[in-house]
Image (cartoon, rainbow, N blue to C red; front, side, top):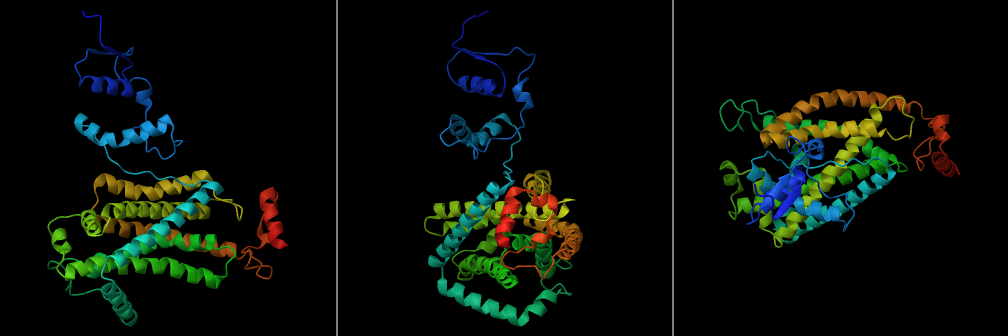
Length: 393
């Protein structure tokens, strides 16, 4: 028996086994020692099985350097070892006032990046076509909205095959369901962040910000690609018919811009920012309305917010594992809309119940709240009491 070796690795956990495997690629005598009856018996066995993202490490630390460097290696490693591996993303839920400020910063940065993307598509795209098509489309919607909103295509003239679903069944129902899913929390979130503003400013701000940004996205991004399709520069419809995914088509569209690599990075960061702030807003509002015995003005508990964050995340996580197509996504959104309708009714009942507690004679729109509706226990909190006293003065 050979009692010497070039390298002896002590401990056959995840790290020790990985080191031994890497050294085995060289002309070396490698010995892997383990005190237990099998490999991975101690700390590795208790591992959660997730790959470190590296976002929360101290910049310049060894943990951060190794974690960030190792993350992209897992794709090839798991492929070589024939181990299932999926990148499903990570949701970070804001839990306190400091975290909410961070979310606000993310929201502000995301909005700036969104404006930069819009500007790049306009500057390097067919500006006249985009603007003129936008004016034409908005005029058409204003004139024909009732017809468009209620037309169900009874003869299925827009169906791709006899007896199949037409455009209203495939898209109108989906967009209505998508709105139902999100409308539970969006109005209340807008109201929460608008404390101190008048009702007029809040409504106009919500319309200008939310609806305006949505229209702007469809107008600029949509017309950019439609122009290329209609003018024969590209055939995205053929790509879709040949089995190309939506993400592949979007990637091809972005490649047509100058500095496509930078634009792609901006696009990804913007999408992450939009989803992160939307998830956090939804979890905050839903948790606030569902927690019992919560004092008015008091933030919901961390556990309740985490519960709603996880519940909201189940659908996208499940779709990531299942490789969900756009048609399946639409079905899921329609199904999810039904319980959300019930939840919306419950939230409205709670909203009007709380509204009855407000003494409108003492209500100050510049303050946004009536201090008299706070419970004595809540007023005992020095910070809160100080804020209310300031507002009263």
